[in-house]
Length: 325
Ligand code: ATP
Ligand code: MG
Image 1 (cartoon, rainbow, N blue to C red):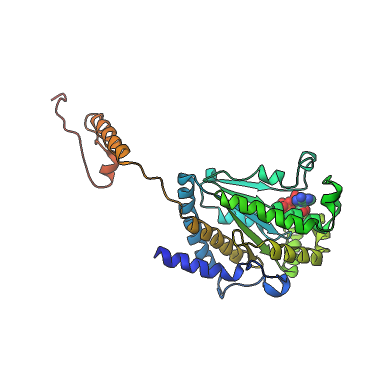
Image 2: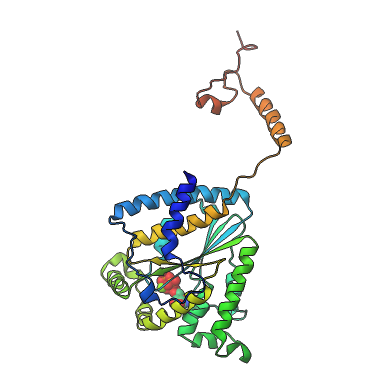
């Protein structure tokens, strides 16, 4: 049953995976409107509910085992739905086991360090799921599309040459390899939005007063660089989808479907980790039994020696001997 479910999830996410070593042309290879044949949003919502439960269960085990950590990198174009994806997909998990870090234009302090420094500072702990809302991939996306960002990074001459992007791809791959080898799985999701759906979402941000705060003129300026971003995304996906940390291109035109996919990819990773609750030794178990007997002896007059056993249908009242009579 569990294996069937795992196989179903693996098959569901397979078309979204960027096969390591292949060359991606986003526009031709991945359809932002793909729905895997699911016609009704209601069906998708049902699937998402199942996914959220699965994530909650696995996250409890991940935290209890305290050996592996998971880093989720979320990349998208503006209005791609990063915030909504985080809100919905993580809605069932214990907030204590999750951290979310959003990366904006780097601060002076951040620019005083190497380009991966600020991301390394926000990595999840063991037992935790860390979400990067934008990630180290901005260093080969916005920084590439707007080279003035590279100028601000105070790099030595030799590190600014034309090979800078190839070198960054290699360094990022190696960094992720290092993290994976040390127990931190890296899950990479690119929310793939169509240009037309982005236009519709921007219009909604203008028309719906509750969404006005989300509208940014800068986003519309970035839209003018659509083709440059598509190229940068395609090159990034081609160069940094690896066996240890593959990219998944999430169809994002239907928000509900994108969320199902994001939950499925994260679920797949947790299933692969298969975290287990720690087992106690026989000796500890014997000590626990001793403590249990002592706690039962401490039950007050008339109270169940074990109220939980009672509520589970096994009444175990302590006798009235020694009472007032
Ligand atoms: P929201 O949904 O709130 O708009 P957001 O992630 O778009 O979320 P913003 O504050 O609107 O947040 O934008 C952050 C900006 O920071 C983006 O334009 C992004 O490209 C930019 N940014 C992120 N990392 C870097 C970087 N390393 N160098 C330069 N700009 C960066
Ligand atoms: Mg923004």
